[in-house]
Amino acid sequence: ADLDPQTRRLTERRDDVLGGSYRLFYRKPVHLVRGEGQYLWDAEGQKYLDMYNNVASIGHAHPAVAQAVHSQMLRLNTHTRYLHERILDYTDDLLATLPQYLDAGDFKAMYMCTGSEANDLALRVAKAHTGGTGLIATTEAYHGNSELSSSVSPALGSGQPIGEHVWLLPAPDRYRTGVAEIGAWFAERIRAAIADMESKGVRFAGFIADSIFSSDGVLPGSYLKEAVDAVHSAGGVFIADEVQPGFARTGDQFWGFAAHGVTPDIITTGKPMGNGIPVSGLFAKADVLASFSDTVPYFNTFGGNPVSMAAAQAVLDVIRAEGLQEHAKELGAAALTRFAQLGDAHDSVGDVRGAGLFIGFELVKDRSTKEPDRELALNLLEELRQRGVLTSVAGPHGNVLKLRPPLPFTHTDIDWASEALDVSLKALS
Ligand code: PMP
Image (cartoon, rainbow, N blue to C red; front, side, top):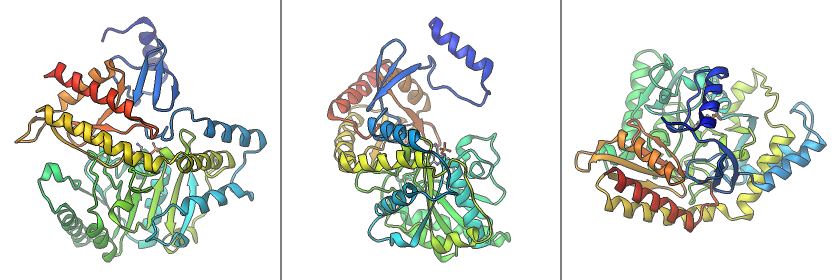
């Protein structure tokens, strides 16, 4: 690509000093210098609409988080081997957001710094509790970058070995499969996978899923009950990875799994929890956690420290004070309607689906065959970028735009995004 001198210089410096596993977005990389709410600015002063970031979930550079971190940092930061109220107050507060049908008193909390660490611990706990090693995940899942969490993360591509005792299943995708009873379809595959592993002498430990299947292409709905029942009747645990759908984003619910009415044995959190401060968590049923915690100590130097907890507390307070869950529901519904209208107007849009401010926009070569159009999706990302809209793609075919803005998203932003999508699709047709 034709890069301006500053972009070229920074790109070359990265190549010189950073490890090669990093991947940049865009043919002409974006050099961001500032953020506020759902907006970002680059070094040349161009303003962007962030349609991708669920880390800055309550808005980029939110002053409530900055102030909470600042004042706790000036007072004390230490670790979980000393007594401190913050971690306890936060745990009480967060567990109170669990759906009514769960007993929050059944759950115990552990804290760490990344989603990968949370899922890594969740998998260890699942194995310790069940005595099994067999795991089920979906074919395009991403759960983290540690040895164990990457072993259930086929989204990393063919260079990443999948665990020897990991069974991968296609995600419950109503659009791609054309199956209306997708819950029964998926549960049948879960039962077959468990039977297969047991026939090979592998004891079942659990099923890990992000309940909106973000990496598998964004699959909202309420269909996991039968699958989770099958997991439980086989003696396995269900790990709900809330790194993507959690923290009010899906609007109807604070937690993604709650849309399915299922009971997770372990819940893991990350990204949106600290609005940019590295804080993540694991919330497990006390009896499930016990087999691990009775025998293995867990200490995470930075996990659960007062500064991290101050950030997490501020995020929760802002979600409530600014009514962000209700807002995500309202704005998400309005955005979905507008994007679906665009879908009707452009033959290359096969499906538009979403829950709250988490929307998948699927591009196809032909609506009747549903043949995925990855190239169009990639070109569309570049066109959108030209119009100041930042997002990325998901799904096994890389043809689904993942539209997932910070929660303060407004009606004016819907206009910006749908205008950009409309003009870009026209330019590419
Ligand atoms: N689980 C899911 C569903 C994720 O999307 C991610 C990050 N993309 C992770 C886990 C890993 O989180 P982290 O990058 O904080 O380790």
